[in-house]
Length: 511
Image (cartoon, one colour):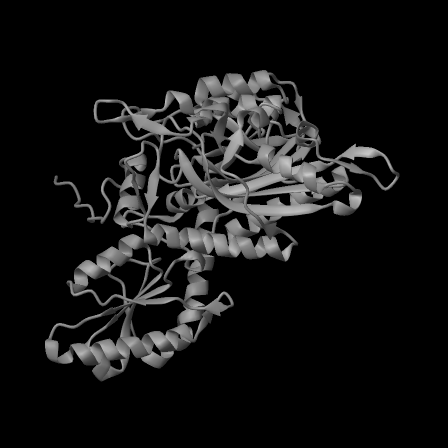
């Protein structure tokens, strides 16, 4: 008996065949980014950077709406600054890029070398994160309780030397925002930490269509030097977790290290309470792994660089001008419409290449709506409309005016549908587990020799010990992603020791 023929896909291998390679092929096919000649670094191409710009613009507005302002701090951090906070330097020591010289000279053989006489008196670290260098500025700015709070964010690049790079997910250099705040009281700083976590969760759900677990990191997963780390954790389509954003309560640790002191309302000298928080271009990788399919990228309309692309069909020179003019007019009408409270973004693909080639390029780029417009459509006063959340060959022929009036609602419907689909997938692959045997079976690949298939997210009890965490990590490469509040407040017994546990925690394999 012959095997049934599989439908051809634009991306090979498929997700089911080889998820890691599928991811790389989606990035390539969507023309998002490419590896640079510097190992571990990437070139973010216009379509990929357009996604980041929309993320940046939206988050920036949310930060500013809560009283934060942007600033910029140095790329280079003196080694002595980093060394002031012991846990911090220990946590980042293996990831730091170090600058030791300030000049090059000829090596006498046609090449260059660091000039021996140009060695820096103190090495500089290319920032892996900016708590220490920003803390040095805050120490100068803060004298009195009246100078607090300081609510500052910066958009910047950072460098963390990556041994196993993967575009967007883990690169030596990446883009991010990092907020750094200083407060008069611990309560204020804890409130800030919660506030930012709420912003990240809202952004993930409403802009990226990503359902996320929120909660606190365990001690072993905490940010180096922090007292408390909160996070959002997303599930992607191979059922692994991605840490999509973190918000840290730093207590007074960094204030002591940097000397951020102020005169209190009672006249006493006190140290400030600080926070830091950030998301990065890793969000683009999360987005791809959560929503893309075997034909390429699928973009939530709210962050797509172009929400609608018009593809003029011009088979004959004599009709080309009329079709292009109609496309321009349609674009004007669509740009006057709104979705998500903003004007719809529209692009016209005027390239002189085949219509089929254009169509598949835009499918792979994940543009939410494709509109084909040709001579016959002009005669009928209609357009051919295709949605990226439906089959690649599925299209509807709609009168121009009707489509223009519906475009915003269609985009909002698509956005909501992606969230519903992602939430259903996550919930179907999140289970409560009460025994060690079931837990180990859940995270053990069931199809030896083929792409790994394991359970997903496990809600299981834990006795709070680091030893249990480390044993499970060593055995299964599974970690506690977060200790969620509320939803997991259910007493039980630790799956490994049988000791009492106050709540379930989220366990998963992760990127």
